[in-house]
Length: 159
Image (cartoon, rainbow, N blue to C red; front, side):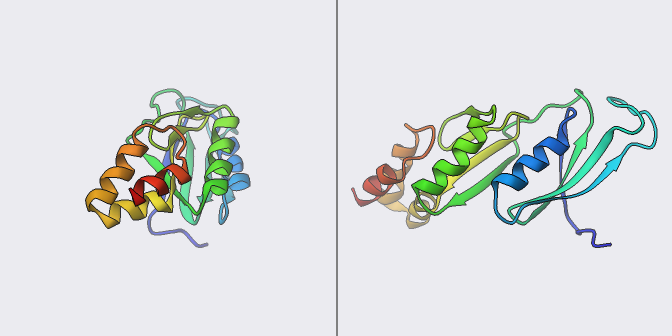
């Protein structure tokens, strides 16, 4: 049994398995692992219901916990996916938003389970590392966007 030393635990109302299957189908180096069914009734569920689902999102170990409606997802936690180009940015953004998710600002969106995602082209990350006027121009351009426009960020970086 290979149990990771550190695992992200995400609270879902009741759809952890569906979320894990969506992530595994959408992102590379992602998969669904073991599914544990509750041995007895629990707050938010019944004996035999899926309680936890182990999964990996782009190499990160996670557990989805079907805990009922007691807690909600928030932007305080997000997956940040670095993309190589506009096609990859569009692919992941469109998958999340097109599957019942919602757009937000500055490259952020939420999936239909309320988990926040930052779909962030590497050019934007590189601009921030460059610093100075290049970072300022790219950051100001980003502030006007929902899904990140790679060409517009590249143009802003060059001035």
